[in-house]
Image (cartoon, rainbow, N blue to C red; front, side, top):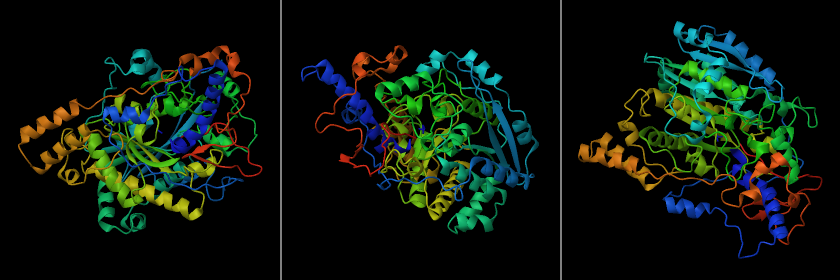
Length: 592
């Protein structure tokens, strides 16, 4: 999630729950828990109904396919080093409008073991880079900026998101420019995202009616709007945030890794008898910490389906160089809008990651209307839109997009999921997170580049409240769009949208409509999702015991109960998939 990030989250997350269920079945048998002492699990459907969450459409796409599973064809996809060089070549050929900056970070040493990485930041300003733009990117501060912020902002406040937190003050004055940040490659296995970044950078370097029309389905009106918007926009692109994780993906299976597993992950794998993820399945960074769980907002909270081998948040917020680099870039650039691009499913999401209930404010309500419109136009409506925590099927804490909104005060902080095969085996990570056919790869790059350009046009035209427009009102164009079937909405969201539509279109008494909207916003329900150990006895599943080693009742391998989940078979909408001959199923799935 988003947290965003999330791809195999729905089918793969169910499959990987097999490992947890196996442990729980064992515990139940060994401890003699009968009907009277049955575990009461968190009933998500009941809880969602009680809080008034409206149903939304969240389809799955993909295909079931047997082993052997495909591996990347590096003549179709680009290896990271080749791709990075290609981006440098594009930028250096258009130095008037483009600039590339390499930034490094060392991160927090763990057990006296240093760990660092670097990223490229590409800046594009059509017509010519201004002196202010160049000064900003050439003076991005060091890691000391992050350390100073951590010193002045107590971890406990941000882990609770209590009333003491304050967004970082914006220093840049309004100069009429729209500033957008686009982040790709936060997770190593999401290869299609960095391909899309390269495609976008190449297109921007030669943006004209002639080059835009083939990308925009020969829509001359939109192409003209794109050029006008780009004339007043500075685009900041991180082509690959997680280089170290990506390099593990490019390794041959069995190749020696540079860093050892953190103790929490190693102990978890031993206790649950799960196997280490394949290199192609590497989500986390080079030392197995998820950059999209390392942010201060609600850092350290763990959902009740927490999987340390996938989403270990690290020893401290902003411990990871990948997160520190993004912090430094966003602090300097001060964008009004940010998109974090992932893969593993199809989806268009707004904050929060930590709740199934979508934030209820004019900006987010307008965003889901606009995302619905783009989804219908470019993707045939295949993407669920709205709250990550509802549409994806799980909540997440310590995510980038939530801190972008609450920490940096960014009005529009979206997460896009741009590809995914949600029905395949969790072992088939290449196809689970990426299209694999050449024509399909090319079409994904084109469509999602068109989405980015369409999004920039909407932002430039002031269609998201608070960005080049009033923060309290819809534009007429937004008001005329239909209310979407978005995930995470309650009746209060619908009422607020209806009221904002009426205000923009001049319907009804203005003060009465304004009061109606304010009441709807204020009455939006809140919802606490169970954390690890809350919906079942803590001593049964709370992984804090891993610090002291697994309890005795987890050490023996349990016998599988008749009809129960097996090591070989995963869950997929109640169906058991029989593995192909020679296939070794990973015990525990994957997530985006």
